[in-house]
Image (spheres, rainbow, N blue to C red):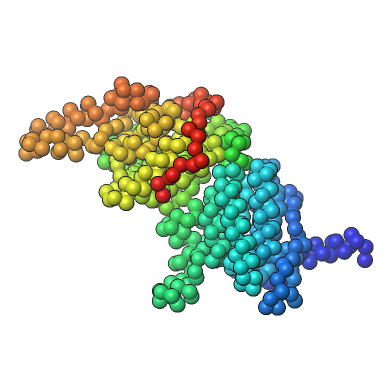
Amino acid sequence: MTVIEQLNERRETARLGGGQKRIDAQHAKGKLTARERLELLLDPDSFEEFDMFVKHRSTDFGMDKSHIPGDGVVTGWGTINGRKTFVFAQDFTVYGGSLSETHAKKINKVQRMAMQQGAPIIGLSDSGGARIQEGVAALAGYTDVFQNNIRASGVVPQISVIMGPSAGGAVYSPALTDFVFMVRDTSYMFLTGPDVLKTVTNEIVTAEELGGAKTHTTKSSVADGAYDNDMEALAEIRRLFDFLPLNNRAGAPRRPVFDKHDRIEPSLDTLVPDNPNLPYDMKELVHKIADEGDFFEIQRDFAKNILCGFIRVEGQTVGVVANQPMVLAGCLDSDASRKAARFVRFCDCFEIPIVTLVDVPGFLPGVSQEHNGAKLLYAYGEATVPRITVITRKAYGGAYCVMSPKHLGADINYAWPSAQIAVMGAKGATEILFRKDLDDADKTAEHIADYEEKFLSPFRAAELGYIDEVIKPQSTRKRISRGLALLSDKATKNPWKKHGNLPL
């Protein structure tokens, strides 16, 4: 056998992972193998693999008699629509995808290369956790991975896709990355599984209830989205990748666009109902200011009273944060504040401009709600990227202060004619200011009308310079597009500091 034939044979053996029987078992669960997933994620024939022949060095518990090339993880780099990215995909057919010392070193290598080369890291997780047979060596390997996650944070985008179990220490790494996505019914994330929980606390819970996709997308907010199968998940990751810069110096990406930057949307003139208590769908506005109506929403199923996600304007990626009047009347609560704060900080890390669409009547009552609101306040206050704010209707009280006003460093602030900017609504203000007249319906109505004219009109804020212009709703896309063009060369720096102390 020639050396080339030997090489080909070794490669074929490595590509089989744990063998055909285990591959068939993976398929029977509705899951793809690690290599099949990478083929779908990356451009055809673009994957360059590293460390295909690496084997573990463990000798305890009979491990010296079992050596499978690759040691449970496939690593390397490739391209998505021609843009490079580093990847690792854990192989559940090899020792259940468990992490060993050498498994961790393979991941460490692509993490370091991603930082050096300025390219994103995408990790496809399918692992039972640390390899028990290796003890502390496996734990050390995990901690090295965590350290690199932390070092890469804010340097290159990091995306985790949970495509099977992610138990024990395996959940920490995804939690440290920028985005986490899951596959419904086949992926789970938990530190201690249902059996351990039953033993320790006597709680009986299923794996799905404890750490399934529904739990993490609707309750814990650990996951940013969930998809029905591996194929859909990987296709959506490719779509998200197109919105993201390669690193913190590359700037928001641009792509060719076939939409007019000055497109007028007459339907927006009637989007906000005449009755200030009636809801409307803010997603309609988001879609109509976006190039070709394309909106990639983040955490769609969590804290639905605020919208976060990516659009493009004139081909450039833009982050959008918007109150949603359809849910809780658009009020801010702790979950919404935390969700939006994290998204704002991501955009600021990677020089992605932020557009904020405001219709917020205030915070939900409660001490915890207001404390969490400080997170969003802090995130906007430290952001230096181009920022445009549009107030469509209500902007009341402390919630106005939080939603990217001029005073918090927003560059351009617009208001629709329907905007109401005040400490509170006219009825509530009248009940406090003119309590003695509450029994007189005519006087109360007069006071409400007077308050609305003096304080709820957007022209009051415009007179003070807090609003740059009161605009026609139909021209919102055009105004945002021109504003972003103006701000394309913005250069702002905060005072030097090691880092701030975010109110966690």
